[in-house]
Image (cartoon, rainbow, N blue to C red; front, side, top):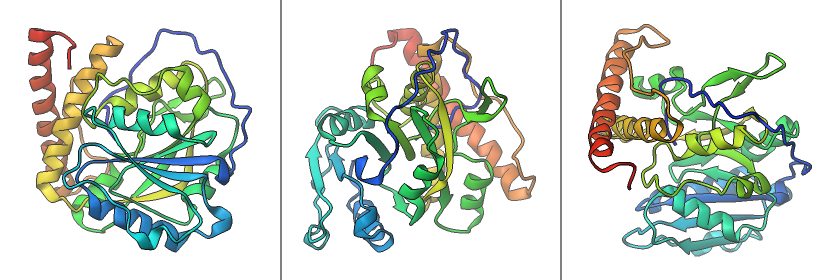
Length: 303
């Protein structure tokens, strides 16, 4: 998951590829990269089986353990269901590598990417079916778990919702994807070579993937597909998250030869708390951006 502070423009001409595969729940493989979040995986599976019946099951759930210590395990109570749950290991660092490895063994025609700190809702899969319009990928919706001031800020700023742009028909469409909740046609994913594994952090890798997908076909929103996100890591997690996103901004800037240096901004909802969070978000973003800028200027784009 990541946040880009401004639009990225591509000079390549879109080929307008459309997916011939209609979305069906049993054609969806869910891929979840995870590092050191056993509690998150437990919560994901518990809530998945609480909100989904057997007739709505996807093809499989693939959990990719990216060097967790101790290793990620699936509780035996979840293996009693008829839904295949596979845990595989990825030694190469980063969620990009982990997701790519998950897709390699996926049997579904569609890949649903979720994060390990997401919580499924009843509409997670069905929401995508309702949005099926032959796009090659869809940006799902994210709602916060709690109702505190920090969670409200994440929601009001649409931190985990991709930026809107216009298509040729004048409709709002996502410019890229955020893989906390995103559905991608597997063939299109393979056509562009999957995630760029040079990006070894959780920041920028999904934006880059979405931009490349948008060059070969249409992206669409699927706002009725809702996943809940747990932002309980507080203000320290807030700082770490946006510092990482600042690094992601700089990496995507290098890949796409554009300017993504963070700038000061006003929050969408002008409250005293939101004004503080917006300034702190900018501070965190610029911290990560400048750190990565120095590294790239010294060593080049070598991760």
